Length: 374
Image 1 (cartoon, rainbow, N blue to C red):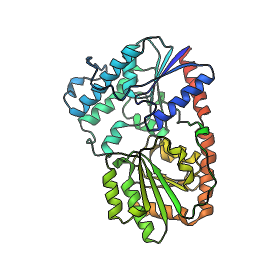
Image 2: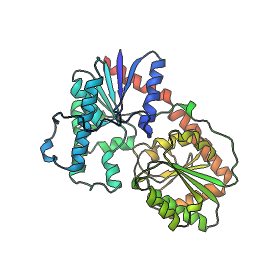
Image 3: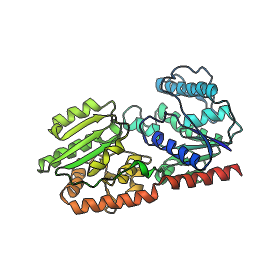
Image 4: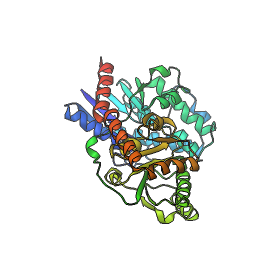
């Protein structure tokens, strides 16, 4: 039996999906499964020329929109690359992106195909002020969910909350299965440390949807209250300069270190005390599980998959999005109470080791694969 794990982004791309699937693939290989990993290199752009058809809606209604045309060109490019590189036969294809699933179903129409929908591109674009809710781009991107439902054999997603989100766009949401992300625990090495100054850390792409403006405003409040801290910001993105200027304006630039992109932030995280990310939406929020496995106290927003990972006051603390005062109050509880901070960190670590283990994901996927084959 041969299974193709198909990513959109290459494995070295930052982010939960691209960093997780290669470890899943390796885990299956160690159990003697024949598994191949495939993705689209960054250098492949503008190569595909195929006509694109959709079965459940008329693409003519969306043609000509610049963002949609760019998205569809990526579909063509993936099709061009996959046609060149994938010459064999597969017993199952597991795609980890909607366009990847549609592309490979076109190339392998008789092969059972699974798609895991890890996040919402349209939600991110709306929160990052790139498109309007219910605008033409939004309608096109959400129409793809119905196309997937009609064409693939199994739909998976990563949280109950995101399954609920998808239910608005498909006919049979009860058929969607949920398999939360999992991580190779060996990548994460908690370190005993006693920082004289509290170390806060956040890891994300620097875009409006991550709510870092709220975090910087909360840091300003904490500083005004007389607390010492350092905030480590790992990641890059289009609003980095804007965030650096906001740090200057809020008079917290000296307390913040902007690192830019880091390939393996899990090697750096264990030296910190508190992980905080006030996202406005997250389908799962892999970085919270990663921070928990580094044994950090967690502070996140009560949205999406974050709220499924954090049980408030048990293994972390939840706040509302866009509320710098509440975020400052919450961080202050952890900064000023070492015992409480360590209690939260250990509870997060214990839960993550059980609930977000790589073995659990492999076991669940093995059941899906076996059922599909029979």
